[in-house]
Length: 291
Image (cartoon, rainbow, N blue to C red; front, side, top):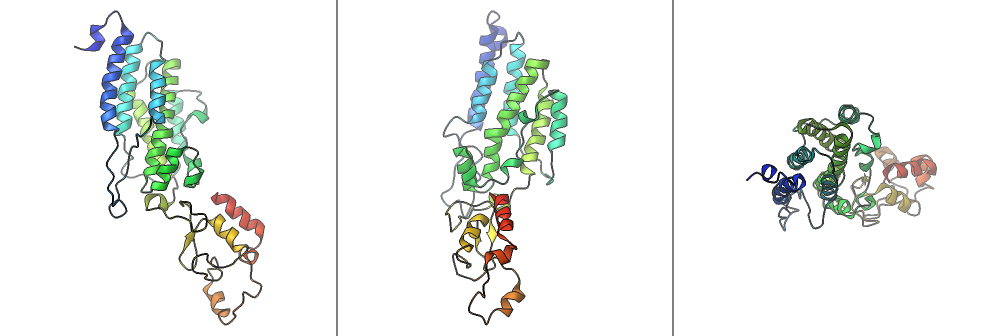
């Protein structure tokens, strides 16, 4: 029997029945996917990691269980459908590398006028973080895993919760909402995540910096073909202007002609990191960009 018609005297109980039914399906769809032992040779992207209660589940539970308006049944129906469709949402087949920010803000302005921009999902500030710089341990672990797993983790830990809170604000302030409009917004937000200027390294098997031993997203390749964090390499070169792995001289000097001219000279002839970058200030600026 439909719980919405079986509990006329207890609308909240009927809505909880709808919610529980929806969450039972969601628990199955969000379960942990298998990981092959030889994932380096045959990578399997881990879409969900449910070893703990994720932020989207925490936010969803808080949003739906604290609603105290007469239209509770419609509210519950909306959020169960919204969550189900969000969990099935995939990036568009073709995602241009451009800024979606204005499009997202325009759509939000139609759904939640006068909304604070800080309440709208924005991923660009996360692009330049190295795995160890994520404050959230789950995002850090996903970033270290490679193969784009971190993007799904960001969506689950940050994108979806922001959308739930926005939708709740819309219900509180403007009343009944339409799932289709919010899924359209969610698709744009998800595409903005995948269409940002992420380094190619997040979609590959991640390398570790041989200097700090941490996983790298933003790498600097030397003339001898080795990769390091730029800031780690710059610190090393301030005291030893050779590649930390193979000891190739001047690892960031890409002028082949200069290398040829100096090939008969066993010394560095006073060469320094300052000469290569012009001055130390420029080197420090380069370091700050990548930190």
